[in-house]
Image (tube, rainbow over all chains, first blue to last red; front, side, top):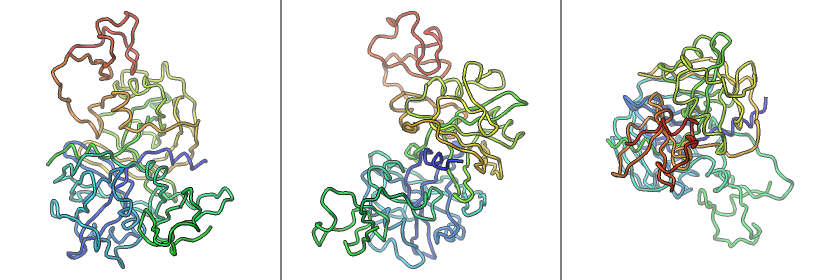
Length: 212
Length: 212
């Protein structure tokens, strides 16, 4: 069985958000899809280890924000590689309340959903949400997971269904962001980057990068 | 509520196949995604009106074939716009039995799954399948639904979760394939195409096109 076959499935890149007793919380999700058109429902797969999972379960509501190719990659670093349990992901993230749910700015579209069903699996819950409010926020091209991975050189959180494990090295020295997993591959050698250079994904400084 | 927001979700294009008492059957699916990595599971959403739905329910097994951008579009016409109940979709479709399931030739990868869970919704069943055999078939770029829709000008079956209803006309004369929904938009006026011209999606002749 060659599990790389699973990498050929196509996904978008989404922020899945909810409330934690009035505090906005959220995480990155790749696994979201429409299930029925009448009524409009979508399913999202969320790891039970995610703090957002608990909040969706308790409130019975979640919003899906669809990211665009030109959405700020720091949104992915912030929402995908830290936990809402000990981080206020919305501290520096402008958002609006739409359909009674927190929707971070910078997305292409949003879908506000009420949980009407769920399916438990080994590690994830598939929440089925009936869409009760949705709209386009601006024009643009939806970010696919392939674009995130190939163009932005983004990595996957270990809690994601699509987590691929550590990727193999070709023997070259590689510099990887310890906060968001971004791998530097610019032409300028990493050591020669200016001191104020920051990770294009999550915004931390050079000191958060490690050589692997 | 602006339901066009749902169109910003990203999908691949897949053939979902199974057996009907020894006869291979299948349909097109857009809604497929990985749910867990250990064990590897995928979920597919299939309309209960699809004949393939009954066969997956009865056998407890399905295969997902991932189509590539350069896969023969006729596969989509054949598998997406007719029913296995009255059509032998595999009659002219070469396939191999992989992991005990029929996998049409021309795909990029296949995943053979055993149903280990399901979630019923208004019109569709979400089947959760544990992947027990999968492999890459060849190299290539996975076809996304956006590519199918924008580049191949493909349409959506009414049974698909992503069905968008009739699209609006801009007032020009349009020629649409009554078998697969393909809309002709070549430079040569449709009336001047040679008599042996066939639909690039599903292979039927000009006589199956109607003016709308």
